Amino acid sequence: GNVTFTMIKPDAVLDNHIGGITKMMEDAGFRVVAMKKTRLTEERAGKFYEVHKERPFYGDLVKYMSSGPIVAMILEKDNAVLDFRTLIGATNPAQAENGTIRKQYAKSVEANAVHGSDSDENAQIEGDFFFSADERF
Ligand code: ATP
Image (cartoon, rainbow, N blue to C red; front, side, top):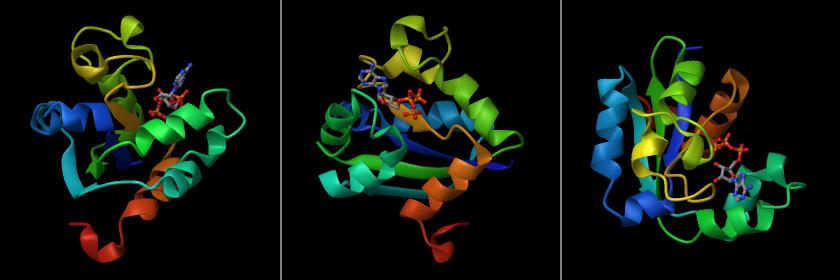
């Protein structure tokens, strides 16, 4: 797959890390296809994370992801989904490797700075959730 979907989460946006995080993405070879600063309502955050609705952290995650603005992006690169997951690092920043976005910017398992799609199929679904065809270049 050539594209993945990412969000810069509310904690990182609030702390003025949009530029630093986007620079790490571009330096790793990802090209920004689409980019938007927006805020999810609780209802829309709930829909985005519907796959996690049976998980114990779902309610907190939905509240957190709707607590402030986020930056949504579609990124392009060969092997985008897997290479991007390597770049962001482990979900828990305590386990994230040096050089990863979460090692540098994540505060906790929940406030972990960025989202990254886990499959080509979800990258399509998640990109379509935020962007229409005329917003991709
Ligand atoms: P993402 O899907 O955001 O890239 P991920 O695939 O690394 O993250 P998932 O297990 O899919 O992690 O969980 C989705 C998100 O839910 C995590 O990024 C994190 O913000 C939150 N989360 C996951 N596990 C926990 C937990 N135990 N407690 C609180 N929040 C959690």
